[in-house]
Length: 573
Image (cartoon, rainbow, N blue to C red; front, side, top):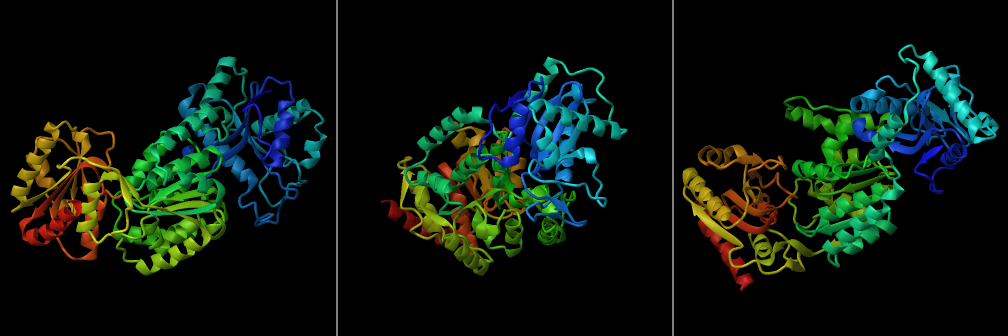
């Protein structure tokens, strides 16, 4: 028997270890792949296959293994309570997800039978009359123990597969055995969706060493904290490396075989995270904005033009679905990384949805939570403080205070123009940057601003930056900003910041761009205000810049902004 991987971790469930040992002792020329995760091919819902066994002259058998010593069904629910979804439904869902992907990717397998069964090595199970299960779908303890050799076990599995094929009129039996070429093709197809890939250890270690070089002394201990603590809370201002740490922890937990979700509040950073994590091809690692992930795992699709009522009702719809045991089983994660936690903790309805995604809730569940809790002006401040206090009580904590994104001069401008806590940063990794790291320009009207912004873009490009290095952020709503006029008058390409691979100057709003960064940030349409919400945008917008910052302010706000800027200049002397 060709076993992939060639060994099993002894910490794996006892039932899986027993099945693995039987299979590996067989002399049959089959292929058995242990632990596939088909979540990416099934709307990111939990869709795991304990064993996929390729029987060359029969087909592909998807095997669900349960290690419980007692398994039963009383007509409405399975017991023990830890079985939240029918094992047979699990195997069937995984079988259909695998077949859909096979037909889509490997045309030669379009007519290869794909069937399923369950093996309960430690539990007796009599098929109840009130459930639609056929006797050939299950191999319980009695029959498993009766297979005295690996060959006898394989013979039993093959008989089950043949009976399943014969009972389904939509399945055509395999007429010609699969060739060695097709078997290798199937193994290659399964490689990216294997949950346990020990041969990747060297690559994982290399990635860890590479990250260690990028992290400062202050950030590096967070990785250790997540190794020894099931719940960790990281607090820090913009630019302190929270998202970088969150992505790496998500990757490490997924490499351990856990089903991991990376959630954030902002849609753009959610798209960026999904793109980064998707490139890793971890089948059990799912990332994105909290709403995109929640909708994906519950099967909710947004209408073409969703109105406010849709978004207002969405959390309750999600909660209703996640309280159903079968939906909860498919959706739930072993570990969550919750970035921009301040935005989620301040929204009770949304937080309730996230709680339902974690095995054990926030009380006993496993997660890393990252947020900037000092410098956020949120409508749900009361809810944030109460929920944050609860998390602080239950989690190991770490404070990040060194800014590793911005030059000191830019960071100090953000501190002065905003209402940010002056103790947010203890220091700056990036010193220097020259005298031209930031500039303030006053404009008279929309046309004057468009002309001045266009000129500034030309100067920036002339100094060696590319169009993709520049992001124009409107201080307010995009439709009432200079962006439409700039797009109309400029000969340069302006593309949405969400189009990560597109060529051209990026455009967005300060609020939407939270969590992202670019070399050159141009903030437009500024009208200074003492409002906490308005001043907080300075902190968000300014801290996006890694090399250059340019602010365009309407002349009506000159005295107020000049006063703040003068204060910043004194701090930099």
